[in-house]
Length: 622
Image 1 (tube, helix red, strand yellow):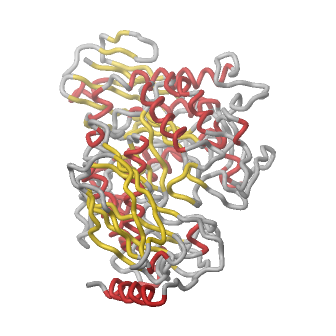
Image 2 (spheres, one colour):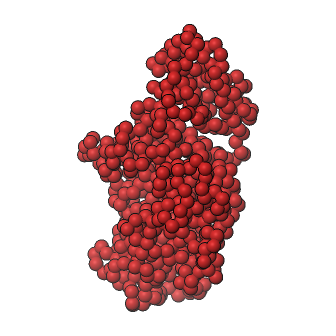
Image 3 (cartoon, helix red, strand yellow):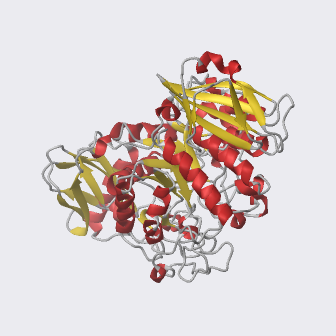
């Protein structure tokens, strides 16, 4: 028997003799049972409940419900917590399970667990994949559909749209109101920055300092609103990807005032991470550097969670399963993926894959070197034997290359479009080229339009490239409106409000009439490519053949069976190019005609291809 359980049993006897419970906390305690609901029919039939109430650790839980039995009881140092493993049989019936907590003489407390039946087919839910195009949005800055929830009683931070780092009022209803806008552009999935409660004193709008893992922030809406959003999005052909964070929580998370155990977090006060992710895969890294990278706090308001604690790890794994099942999600994006304990993260992936084999998770491993990034993709043969079991990684090396390539004149050994070629030349490192997320920007880096010096032609080239290269393309909200912003000058510059998302906005860019000519030019260009992409198997899962850039022109093909897509990028700022088709005979000889997807022009001769200055051509071959 576990030593802690022996201690707990001794205390049960002590309570029975004295008839009283020792007081352990001077603060007001809100009783909790997390999760408060679960489902019948998971591959793993055991759910671990975390019960929280004053001195509940000195009580003995009892369950009398057909098909449900207590497997194990785990006590911890803090008597205000008790962990209860419930085994739920396949033949159990939906209903409310009463958990009675007794001191041996009398029932002192009762908690309820709602037991549900899983929706038919939920285990086979299809996750996002390389046939999808993902639209990333920040809910606080996208649209305010319900001004009544801008300020909520009891929440620490109030709305102030004039404050660059304040809450502006965007919410779930605002997203629901504009799903058609997202779908019209050809996107098939939405990645929404975190929406769980962030009851921090300030700068809580970004959502990355969770204070309750089971509640949507009320300034965004309710849990039911979130589930309705997923349902409505799915009805319009849009999958939903939930942003999660396991590395850290918010400093005002309810448990921070009364931690279950001393090892629930890493360091008992702020010690900043060195952010050196290379230490994790580096065979020569010192233990000191590795410890600071993975156990140091991400920020002073973000305590670092210790996933080596099995109870905390299981809590977070179950929380992910709960949200997938409750809301009907199609994907998860995991923030700061390499920072938590890597063995714990591997276990998380395996547990999710056990319950949802077709589900997909993308991890943010912000690493600019493919030789280090590949360490984190599922089934890579790492020399230390580690397997992350993470299906999808984010292609930061290709993002960096895009930022540089389209700003350089090229012609050198490794600059200009050669940067794109060189990154793709490292694809031999990855175990699954379809499970790589490709993006020119996100919510943490400078706006791509700013990076490209506000050049629309360059932005079009980036758009054509990111939508046709291997992997899963991800776009950041507002780039279709030419949103500008230098990320080095602060995140507020890259997280602007979407014009038209708030009642009273002078401009409504959700409509054609509300956009400028330049904005509509990019909007239409993006929409044309993405709506074509939906129907292109070679782009979804085809192989790539690319040719070394010559004269500032980069040509690559995506091909599958008897179909192919040819992409030509001319990065010359002033000179049109005529490209000799004979160079590409090894693949062009298999096809007889083509169609320019932007102009709808039919192409019957492959002798030469004209590519105007600073432009891209996308040609469907058959």
